[in-house]
Structures are given as C-alpha cells and as structure tokens.
Image (cartoon, rainbow, N blue to C red; front, top):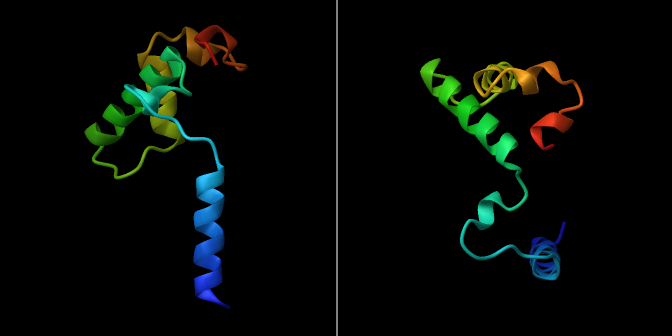
Length: 80
C-alpha cells in the first residue's frame, strides 16, 4: 500500500467536502431537542462514571428531557 498516495487522496477528499463554520457550527445539524437529549445523556454517563455515551444513557436522556420524546418511537415530536 502506498501511504503517500493514500494520504494525498484523503486530503483532497476532505478539501472537496462541505465545511461548517461560524459560531455554534458544531450544533448546526442538531435540533434543540436532540442537543438537549445528548447533553442529558452525557450527564448520565458522567454520573455513572462511564467513558462513553451508550444507548442506555440516551434513553435516560430522553426520559430526563420530558418523557414525551421517550414515548414517541419516530421522534417527530422531539424535532428529529
């Protein structure tokens, strides 16, 4: 495998893709409901001393953020 060619190809692919910039750019693709749920899931993971957010943390985050989202299987009422 030619590592130099791989690196060049990857760099050109990254340059070709769309970029997000500006204030709050990291949250552009998340609705407010999803962001709150993931923030709550992160807090739950920290409380449980877990290194990663997993499905149980997300479920706890959904419940913590109002319960309405947890009861909706499609997530449409949460802004997903």
